Every structure is written in structure tokens, then in C-alpha cells.
Length: 294
Image 1 (cartoon, rainbow, N blue to C red):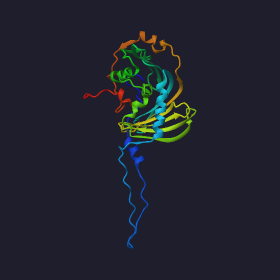
Image 2: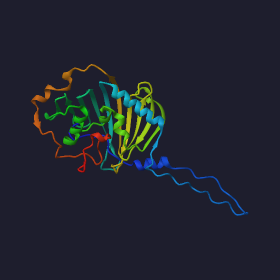
Image 3: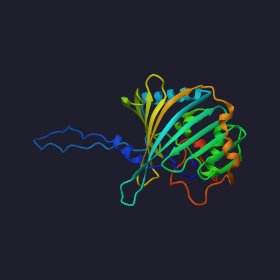
Image 4: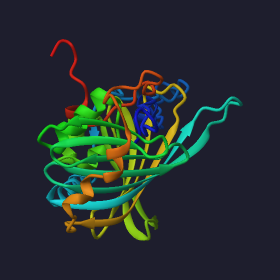
């Protein structure tokens, strides 16, 4: 994603989803004693919404897709992201971005972003990382940490650069989301996403409610839909993942661009003119900025 532009995931109302799932039916039992009228039906008290409800089948599917991604030493895929944005009339507008992604562990990444807004390119070659805006001919370059995870965290903290698929690139995607999980359940099968059979899983913590479509045969994520708690408008975000290649051979020069050499240099920093929407941050806690108390 470009500098501070097009962050996918805004955060809303997981408590509502948990409440709906936690609702129970009304007891049909009544009793009559001594000729007295039957007692009114008693509605059972719903369990607290913060009580974890983790279904084993859903957890197993999430672990399986995590293991499939973590085992790949390199990968490439296309992420097509649709996200809602408030309009002046009230109902949200929808914008779309397409990311062409190539990654090689432990420290290389290329993201080419085309969409309804300005195009951007991101390169990480193991030594430096560069955010390039081709239309404006601007580039921000910084020395990179030794790992992909550390570089993504630095890009997020220093320049508000965050990709909606960031958590899929981590060494262990499941570990990134497991801590704090409040809800996970199996939704059902689908044959209409990505041209393959998938299993649908819902997952949530205190920040985000997500639905994921996972390939039955290859265990690869094919679609992710999310709503974030910190977003009062409950805007929806949808990401379709296609053209998966695991362990492809990727040339080293693919993780840099000669075009940026002649671009005007700017600071690798958070743009002063804009900021991330409220609540937008990676799901994985390892990528979140450390608090002052830490």
C-alpha cells in the first residue's frame, strides 16, 4: 500500500457478533402445582460475550492454512481488495485495489499496488526498503532490519505503511492471531470463491471480526472479509486472494527497482498530510507499535 493510503482493515463491533452467537432460546418448560396457572416461560441468561467460544474444527482449519503458508520459503499471489469509505450522502462508497505480491524468506518482499487511488510500489531486498510512488516520481528509502517481520513492523511504525495481507506473510500466521481469540467457528462449505471448494471459518477477537474462505484441498486462503470494532461506521473490507504460487524461483533483482534511482527522495516517515483511520493496525500483536509502558 502507498504511504498512509488504502489501509484495509478498520475495526468495529465484534461485541454485537458475539452477542448474537451467544443468544439462547426461551425455555418451553412450565409447571403447574395445586391448580395454579402455569408459570411463565423463563428466558435463560445468555453467557457473557467475553467468554471464549472456540470450535475445534475452525481452529484446525486456521492452523492448517497457517502451516501451509509458513512452510513456503517463497510465494507470490494477487490480492484484490475492496473497502468501503464514507460518502457525503451517508451510504458508503466502495474502492478497489489490486496488489501483486512476491515474497522470499527471510527478508525480501515486493508489492505492486494498482487501484482506484494512486499507484505505489514497495521493495525490500534484505538491506534497504523503498516505497515508490511512480506517478509522483517520489521515493522513500530506509535501511531495513534483517527480517521481513521486523521490516514490516518498522514500515508500519515509521511511515504508516500497512498491507491488508501482512499477517499472511509472517513466519507463523496463526501465532499472530491466536492470542486474544474470543470466537472461532465453522460456517460451512462453499464452491463459489476462487473457483475451488472452500471451507468458511469465522474468527474474532476484541478488535476484529473476520470470515475466511480456505481451500479444501490446498488449505490456502481464498477470501477474507473483515469488520473492525474501532470503526463506528462498521465499514466492510473484502480481500480475494488468487494466482497462488508457493516456492517459486524469484530472481533477486525482482526485489528492487531501477526506476526509483532517478526519483525525488523524501523522508521515510509518516506523511504529515494524512493519518491512518481510527483502529487500523495489524492483527498480529508482534507488528503493533509498543506501548509506552513496555
